[in-house]
Length: 477
Ligand code: P53
View (cartoon, protein in one colour):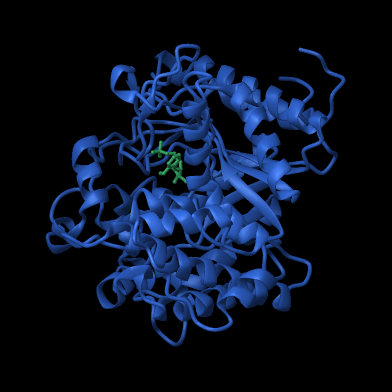
């Protein structure tokens, strides 16, 4: 591949995990239960729980993958050393809200929880790895769900802002990149995962969802404000599940439908990056009987506290048709769509589309004119450990190479990009299915879907490949 195109000198190469999918230690040192701690493993039960979690909250028996996960809580030193060996410039993880505020609405934080992240960040900085921190990644305190109905209630804004301020004050010398909510647009598709909202029978789900989203927007804007006040040097972004949709045909109806579908996620970025509710959402609210309850001053707070950068995940593209019944279907994560005949899909049905990556990078940059940060990208695949602990994951290398190639093209196109973190550099629990066998890592973790395994770590073939990519600043793919 041509080597003349360059990544910026200070480009942040790295990887990303989430606390609940990696740490385990789910009740250790004062930690409380979070929404992710109630979700079971395995495709069908997991999906059922994501949509209707109540029975799983009421009965906690049975295996829950987050409870031990990959035991990152106790093994982070070994793991960070491996990331250091790969030459990571940054590492994205989240703070487990319930380590800091176990129930969510306490007045004072749990010191032992804070200490853990101090130690983790020190360990990262020892290897010159910058922590990139998500404040809330699908791990809201269950206490807030039980007491307030999650983000349904305005009270939760105050709890979140107290939590965020605690983090900014405590870690301001160690953390320079923050994100307020992971994939905030997932609230619209999986309200329990995204916002701790359990939909009641017979209620207007959209009303509950968008009211919760409004509270999240307010919390996010107030966190941006607090972050800038506490550490003027820090940058704080929003984070979107990157979604880009092609029309199935050039029939104008299909084209328009694809735009509408894109707006489902753009909406969340628009409010946080542009600072106001976009005009198109008003019609959507009207037609779906959604009335957002706001307080005086809300709109001003949103307008005055937009994010510094737009972070997003990118795994696949989608296809939209106005006659989807007669098309092949494909699986997505909480979203399914129409099969794209030009693309291959992963074992989990996610349609692999490197050119779509260049497309979405340009699309977001055109829309927001703010720096972007790709904070998740990767291939979930089944790995086989061969004799001598060898794992030949060429499929993963190919996926990442093709995407990094297109990312470099996007930078040539003029997109301002802060960095790139692959999802799950160490194998971890899948958010969508709760499985371990859906692996993303450069580092293999010996653990299976039922929770068996030694947890030992192995370097895959992609480990040395990515090390080289970072070493050459993306020149050698
Ligand atoms: P898993 C929806 C669409 C794309 C990515 O997913 C998504 C979602 C909602 O989960 O999630 C992100 O583990 C998420 C991570 C997650 C990763 O994608 O199902 O931010 O927590 O692990 C990959 O394969």
